[in-house]
Image (cartoon, rainbow, N blue to C red):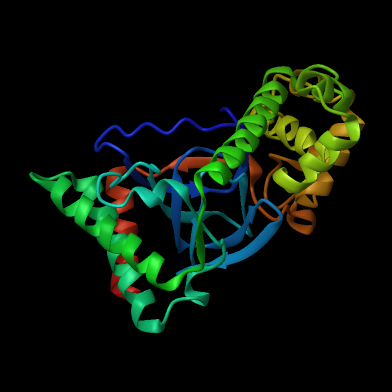
Length: 312
C-alpha cells in the first residue's frame, strides 16, 4: 500500500469514483481529488492536516484536494461511503471548482437540518446508483453529484483562490508530494530532516516548520507512522520474529517498534494477534491489522440500504 500519494482511478465515470470502505486505520495520505465522506457504521477520528474530527454514524466530512488526512476507528472499524471527484468535474459549467477550497469541518455543523437530510439522501442515492451501474446510470450520477456540490456551496464556508494564489498553493502541494514520496521510498533506511532539506534546497528549520504546518505532525511522527503501518502489515506473519518485523519496516530495533505502537494504539505490539481472552485487559483501541478493506458491491448496497432505512 502506498501511504503518501494515492492515485485515484476513475474507472466507471470520468472525474468520479465512489465506494464503501471498511477502515480500521488508514495512514497519512493525500490525493488530487475532493473527497466526500459519510460514516455508515462505527465511530472514530479523522485527522485533516492540523484538525482532528471525532466522527460517528451519520457524520459527513468534505476534504479538499491535496489535504493530508488520516483515519482511525474506535473500538472496531468504520464503514464509510467515500465519494471522490476531480477538481475538473463540471469544468465547462463551473470552472471555479478547480480553485475552490472549502473550510474543512463536519458538514452537519454548517447545514440546516433540512439541507443535511437532503445531503444524506443525495450521497446514499449517488453511491447506490454508482455501484449498481444500471443502464444510463451516468446521467443520474452526474445530476446527483451536481446537486450535492450545490448544497455544499450554499451551506459551507469556502474561498475561490486567485490564479496566482492557486499556483502558489499547487507549488506547496507539489513539495508535499515530493517529500512524502521520498519518505515512502526510503523509510527502510535512516532518514534525517537534513536529507529532505538538502533535497528541497531549504534550511532544516524551514523544512521542520513546513512539515508541522502542512502535514499536521512533525517529521519524526510522520516517518514513524509510515513505518508502523508497514509493521502492522507484517504482524500477522507468525514466521517473522519481532526483530525481523522491526528491520523490514524501518525501525532501528524492536524496542523502538514497541514504543511507536504503544504511543499510537495504547497496546504493546507483542499483544497484537493474541487470542481475545488473553488480551482482554489490554485491548488496543482498534484492530490495526485489519487496516482497510473495500466492501463488496453486495455488502455496500446492504449497508447503504440499512442506513437509508434508519435515517432517510
